[in-house]
Length: 88
Image (tube, rainbow, N blue to C red):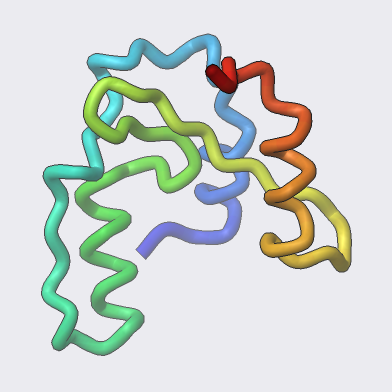
């Protein structure tokens, strides 16, 4: 299992330094859901490497967290409102 220090280093890895094709594609990762949560997490981390920076098919994903008491459900509507994605 990764240590807290190792996870902090992975979290700080700049998005720009990662080549999309070098990143693991999590759509191809499988974890046995019958395992205890800690074992599932360990197996996932072993397969993905950096849980903050990976691919889903051809899309690069970087996960970041804010120091806020707001929940994801409260934050997501704002993200989609401000998103530059075309709404045709």
